[in-house]
Length: 84
Image 1 (cartoon, rainbow, N blue to C red):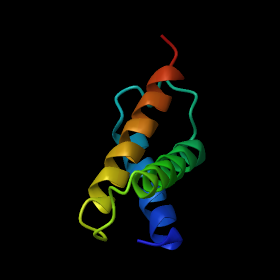
Image 2: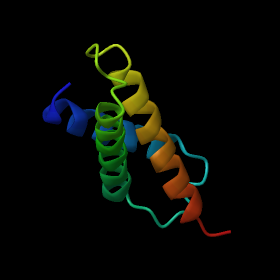
Image 3: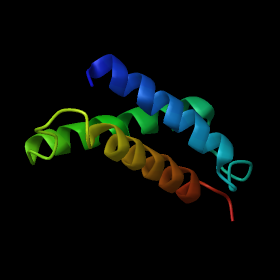
Image 4: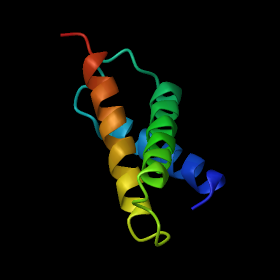
């Protein structure tokens, strides 16, 4: 997966997880910020996987791990910025 794939994956996961988060309406996180956090999470997961040699065989683990980290990053961000 190259850089365009990471950006698209992070943006789509960020938008979907922002839309499905139960605290979305009580949160001060806009859609564009959730997409940016999703892209950042996917990029950080990709870089960490390359540094630790986890993605040495290609795309087998890269897509699910980058997706999961992007999802968790957006969920934590929306949860932390919610008004309680």
